[in-house]
Image (cartoon, rainbow, N blue to C red):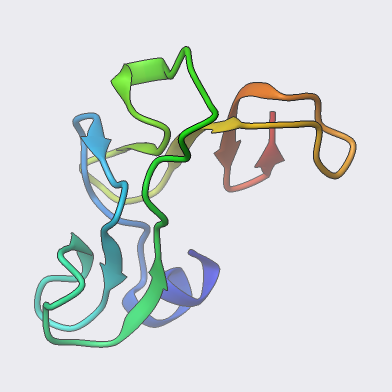
Length: 99
C-alpha cells in the first residue's frame, strides 16, 4: 500500500466495506482494488480466503475499509494460526501497523 500511496498520492478511496479477497490493487486510471485482469500497474494480489479460518469480520477474510479522501484505511483479516508474534484470530492493519 505504501508504494501505491507514493505513486498515486492516496490510499484506495473506498469509503464502504469491500471484500478484497482475490482482488488486485491496481494503479492507472482506476487506481483501486479491481479484478486482476484490469489494466494498470498491479501493486499486489490479495489471496483468496483460507479454508481454515472462521469467524471473519464482515463475512470475509480480507475486507478493506477506507475513506473517500483516500487518507486512511483498515484492512480486516483473520490469521489461521499464530504468526509473527500475533495470535490466531481476527486482526486489522492500518497505516501505522497491525492490531
